[in-house]
Length: 287
Image (cartoon, rainbow, N blue to C red; front, side, top):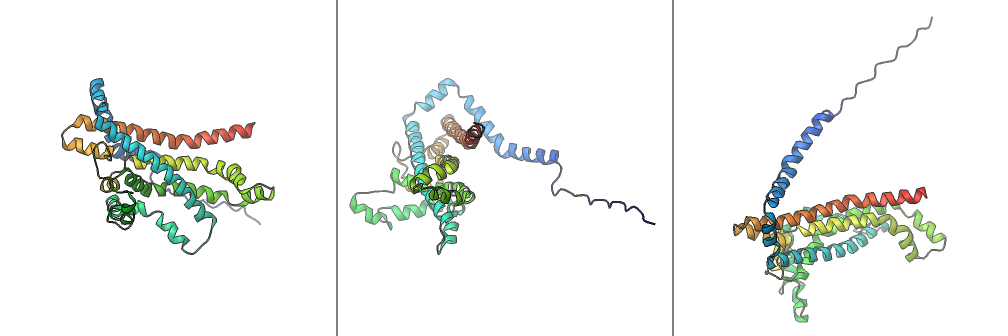
């Protein structure tokens, strides 16, 4: 006489973390205390300056010169980091050579290296009596204590952002599409322009935005190599510190608010770029 086998009770799976409500509450509380609260305080303080206070801050020639230096050098450095980072990512993904893993590890060095150490090292290299600066000085080329030195420092700290943004896209792309384009008679330039570039363009723009935002607020690695000459090589983050030391809190808050707005715009661009490209691809697919 056969009996019906009763199903065994399934083991209850326990989540490693608390429930959604508790996790969300703790996460938002931590985010609010560490990030949102200081930013809110800065925004409220900046809003209290009034129109006259903002005009006084923005009309200061030293402030305008510092903003010009920060934005200009950050933009140039982000462009250079974008081109160099895309090339490094391409080499790491497409080629196998001795020392590849070492090169891949060295890309992350600026992440772990203290910014002050990076600034001192770059100054020692590019100073007039440095390893490279001593050869440039007779040619009339000065890197340290000039805008060129600031750009080099910002490229150094911005390069990993572009490499690590582009590298996963190239790894997921593979070489099949390139080989298919080559088999159909496409040249290398056409394959790069029609096959590779459309796929990596969102990552390139995101890497550029990350490098620009990082360079805009960089402080430690720049002040050693910049020379910090007012109206020439003085950056905005340093001027904020100077304003605080002078007890000019309104000037420091106004300048910090401008930098904060620029950072928010970069963050907005970083999040909108993938959405725009995804919407464009979906529209092409529907057509």
